[in-house]
Image 1 (cartoon, rainbow, N blue to C red):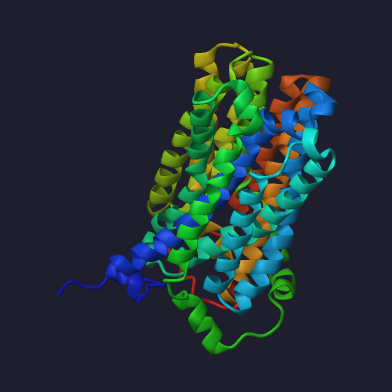
Image 2 (cartoon, rainbow, N blue to C red; image 1 turned 90 degrees about the vertical axis):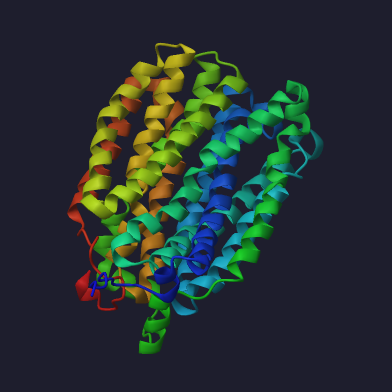
Length: 443
């Protein structure tokens, strides 16, 4: 008789490998797909469109800095959202919390598509954008952790990395999808039409994804790991328990995704603007390259998740950080060759390294924390990473480069990747351990 494969978190849905798990996987993917689509869409628009639509009175450089600064609003809100949604996710369940997260993200993005320009309603336009950006941040603060837990807590032990690919893929695919849609709208319209209203179409399209996501999420069941934890009973407030027992683990967890988030948001926002303003590429050329590099990001995210089940997640992620150190120093010298093919190659390499670091994160970071506060702790660590890599780094890029040159910012990228590697290698590799545990001493 063939011996059954030992599993740590296996549920009926995961064992079946059929329609039940397919629904769970799609439910985790669609939420992060919406989040990723909305966030990347905003990042690209903030670099190429919003300076002219919402900050026209500031001029080119100042308008771009002000527009990119609004990126940081969401990243500041994300840790708050992680704690808010994490509390309810750890107390009431993953499923219920994820429904509210997807609604918040979708509504915020759809409303962005109908805000009048600053030429129409004046200063109210950028104020409304900032408010809706904060709503986006709160929602995505809860979405990532909930989605990765939803799939990893259903997954078989030895395929947890592969199954965690789905929510990670939801965040990586939009780096190709959002620029591609903006490019399509740009090709089908004149530059004047694109700035006037064409850019709004992709934002309004977010409503369709929200409806699909809600329908799927209402059909799935709560994770078996959370259900067992609730049967055992819970004590304390999740955020207080997390900081009491594993504050140092949470701090180190900040570095796990740092290379990915920094590379993605620097590439999709600042480097996109750099290609137009300094290399003198057309907007459509930059959008095309952004879409192509996003495909590299998605493919290598999948490979990273798949390989992590075989070689261990810490080794997979840490190795990508080391590559990031080298590439961070080389990125701008390569870009400064100033040709379209080299620009395209540079962005594809950047997003390849981001994908190699990202695929395994969906399982590795949640594995560090017990069920009773896993949603809160994993989500908070990840979202603090977002503040640094997605909010601060793209904002500092034009300031550092204008004052000290591209080499100085390359050093900043390298230092961030070193920090990421040190944090990752200092954490335990729990690739082959169950996620069904509540004792903080195991962390």
